[in-house]
Every structure is written in structure tokens, then in C-alpha cells.
Image (cartoon, rainbow, N blue to C red; front, side, top):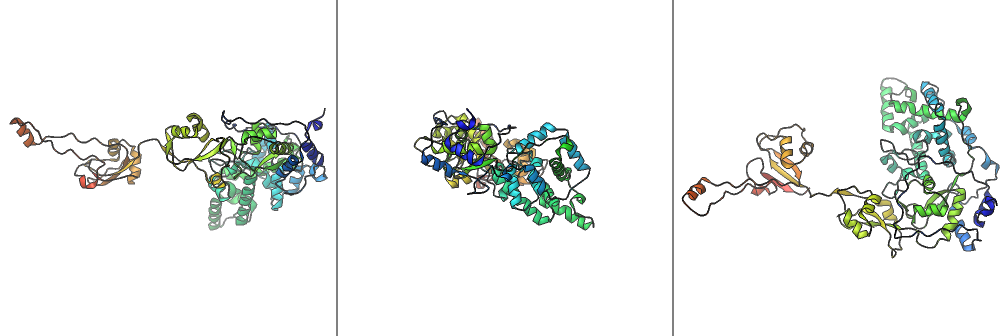
Length: 533
């Protein structure tokens, strides 16, 4: 029996109307799978039999499927343009002025010496290239920009740089927020395939409008627009040219556009470099499927008939093992699996999500939060990334098991703004202002109050080796209370004691360092003010 005879009627009809889809490319560097649902919540089994789908199921499944690039348009994979070579389409769209220098030849040699790396990189990229090329074409941009993820991340959607740039297009956190890429405990849109592509092309378009030159726009994408502006201004003052090749810039940026040129040259003529490119058809590799209720990531993958790692290759933006419908209205799936998912989701019975969000009402320990949410402390710490010896501050959002009586999904406001704030699990610090005594230094004060010298220097805006003047006000934040000076007997008291009196009157003990000003006195330990920070 052939594969097409084993498919359900819904999938069969979609394939007959659209044609075959290329097999999934092998996975590379897949992210670690999220935690499984709590043991107390059973995931309903998924049926994939070939029974005829009821009409309501077919209608609902059809409603869930959508081509995110052309809403409402039918995908005809038998059309001649759909079977064209996407690489040929990319070549036809090349429009940037070519570079030809030692930097380009260095990059060409690097790629030529690593055919396995190029194969993995281009195979990964084949999943996303059609979408990126289509977006570039819609904006009238040079097709070379569709190759930029080869340079930025090698098309690894969850790549993270040492500078905390993330995703296929390597957005820094602040730049991502500037282009409406949400980043919270539930998701990071810098890894979202559609959202990050939209943001990257918006950013590149803005930079091109700013500099009027694509090479300078690319340099600014890598180095920052402010740095490029300064480099241009410097050359203008010196009467020098202001093109990309003439500007003074870091070696990484100097090498950036030549690397893109090298990839362009390889796409133009892979045989010249003893390399090969995987075949990529000129049609969508994935479809978007609407998500209308919160659903576990593992269940979504199961409904689609995909491994968890494969599902995450198309939907890498999720930070937690649950997809919140209020924030993620769609998931991306390969064409065939999108049909499977829509049909299985439409006929699924039972809970979809075993996790929900809980806003902590007051500051508490992880143990207290775990007890309130009914899960082991170790599991709560792991899934919410709570380090040891840290408190969860009031107003923080935690992911916790979803109780059977909870029917509402996480709200849009919480899905978009959820955050986790932590504080050290230690006694609260108090602000202590004292008068420095003779010979007091930063190190002496730090040792006396059991804090670090650099902290004392920072609190008082002095150097770490500074010496305080006698009587100078010194600020310290500490939970440590200095011991009171032992009681001393006065001369009169000692004389009285010698005369046989029963009571010895002790002198008033020195004021501890957390007393108010009106109870202070002279000496290096005397406190002139105290307040909570």
C-alpha cells in the first residue's frame, strides 16, 4: 500500500489539490526539549486512523489552515512557478554592487574548505528561504538580503551570541524591543521565524533609508547605526570618501559584507567552489495553523505527528512547555503535518494544556510557592529557572500545573507582560549613616560591617582605597548589627564598690549602629541616621 492510500481523506484531498511536499531535511543543533507535563495530568492519545472525517471536523480543520504569506489564496504545487528552482529566483533578484577584494576571497576559501558545514547550513535554510525571499520581494529589496541569516546564524533559529544577540537574525534585546519583538518568560519573538524576519527587514529598510547605501546599511546592522554615522563624520572631516570600503571599522564589520558577497558568489556558481546546494522548490515549505486555546508544546507536536525537536525547529520562540493562544495565535508546520495537526486538533477531546500562569500575591520562597501550586520545589525551580537562595517577588508570574477546575486560558495582558523578579533570600538591608573616626578607610568600614570594600566605595562614591576624614558621614547598607561596647564602670562606682555597696552602677552602653541620630554620640561607631533602602 502506498503512502497516499494510508492518508486520511482530509490530508488526501489537500495533497491531491496541492501536490507532493519535499521530505523534512535532517535536524542540526536542535534545542533541548522542555519539561514534560506533570505526571498528574495525562495527555490524551492522538488518533490518526483513516476513518472518514465527519463534515464538522473537515470544516473546522480547513478553517484552522492558512497560508500566512497569501491569506485566502490556494496553494497549487502543480503550477509551473511552484516547481521552479528557488535558487534561480534568488539569483535573478541579486542587485547589490559586487565586492572583489581579499576579504571576499578569504570568506570564499573558508566556505570552500568546509563543504559539510555549507551543506548543513543550506539544508537548514531551505526550510525558511521561500518565506524570506517572498518578504524581500514584496518590499522590493535586493535578494542578497535573504542570504543574511547564513552570515548571522547559519539559520540556527535558537542561536545566541556572546553579546546575547538571539535568533536567526541575531537581534539584541533592546533592538528587538524597538521592532516589537516581545521578550518575556513565555516567549522570545527574536527566535520567531515570521516575526524576526519582519523585524529584520524593517530594520534594514530603515538603515538603507538613513544611509542611502546597502553596504553601509549592512555595516550598521552589524556594528550599530551610531558607529557608522561617527565613522562617516570622521571621514568627512578628513576629506575622505565615505563608502563602506573607506570607513574605519572593526575587523568583524569589515569582514561582514565580504562574507555575504562570498555566499552570493557560491549561490551564483557552487561548482566553482566544489560545493553543492540542496534543491529548494519555489513554494511554501510551511503553513501557519491557528491556535485558539492554550496547548502544551508536546501535545501540539504529537497532534502534528512530529518529534518535539522538529516542531521546535519551526516554532523556536516558546520559552516554556506551553503555547499561550493569547500571545501566539499560530504555529508553523510543514505542509503535510499542518493538515494532520488541523484534523487531529479538531477532533481532540480532553485538556489541551496542563500548565497555566500564576501571579505570586506576595514575596515568598520557592518552597512556599511550590506548596501553594501543588508541585515539587525542584520542579518549580527548574521550569521557572529560579536559582537557589532566591525569593520570588510579589507580582511575578510563575508557570504552574493547571488544575482540573481551571477552564480559562492565560489572558492576553499576562501573556504579553509576564515577568519574574527575584531577590536574595537574606535579611533586608538597612541604610546606615555613621560618622567616620580617625583612621577609618573604605577597607576598615567594610570589615567592620561585614560588607565588601567595593560596595562601600560605590555607596559613598569614592575609590576603593579612599580614607575618610574624621567626622565625615559614611553610608553603609547592611543587615549586620555591630555589637554594643561592653559596659564600663565609672570611677565613682568602683569607689563605691570598694566601700562595700551592693550595687554597681554601670555606665550607659554605647549606642548600636542602627539607632537614630538623637541617640548617637561621638566615636567611629556612632550612627547619625538609619533607614530602610
